[in-house]
Image (tube, rainbow, N blue to C red; front, side):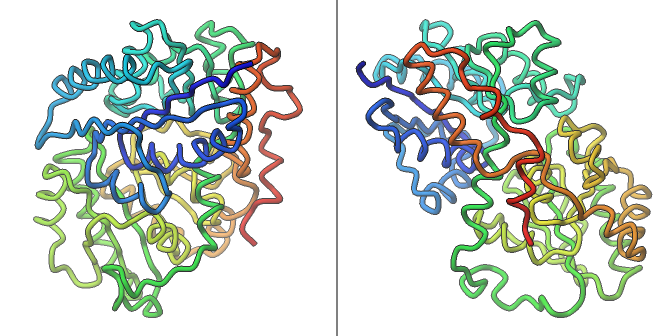
Length: 396
């Protein structure tokens, strides 16, 4: 049997982080699978930030980012340029990850070209097309044109079944971000060459914040910022670190309200290895990031989700995360509870990571190999991910 060409497309930093283990796993099966990587560079600077760290060298870089690009413009450019890229690379299957514009438009271009699509992190659903926006729509539309659905969890598999996706086309893998996290968290590292070289990590407890989602721009992001000011006023030992997204809609609000505030440190987005160590050093994490929701349980860090809804409910069900929305009062109340109640804090730091065990990429590559050979099932049930598998991989 000749090798099958698997073309992976990445556009943003989270896609690169989550697909790096998959690309490596495909490359390790070079007798059966050929790996080709396309970068759309939907987020140029933040994508480049991780390509070197994760040793990803795109075979084709479309360089599509433009200042203040609209979703309409970006979608049209990705669709048009991916048509040309698919013609040039001639894939047997296009692999996409997650819920970005790159994912949806890339998958649609593959569908138009008659190329099968594999969707990593398939089946996440909030059931609210405006939250998160536009990611929830992108997920639904990508699923319609997908041939192999790599669901990270059993819940995601059930969501796909609700949409009449044939069961034999769904494989439960775990989330690849756990693979990335576990492979890097013990790598040699020092804060000396980062924007935090002089940060007083020993002076109190660290609250790590990330918030940049489009649906929170404006008044909701202002509420989040005001809550951070309240918390530093209430807790004199609290240090806040907020890596601020490069989007000007985020920077204007955050810097306008928090620049120069005592014990609130606004820094540029940091590389992924630095961010992993920031999470490990933190006492509490506030985030609207999907990836951070999946990572924090492996590090035993309580997580408050700055969204109205989350499609990653597994950590809510296990008690390792809680949705607090963007209300100033709610954020302060729930953060204060964890900062003052050791029992409540401990309750959010136990149990295995429900999102993965560090072997998702292996399962995806094995599935692609079996698909290439026409083997069924795509992956044997006993090889698929179950949350109990994560117990051995928990941070001690």
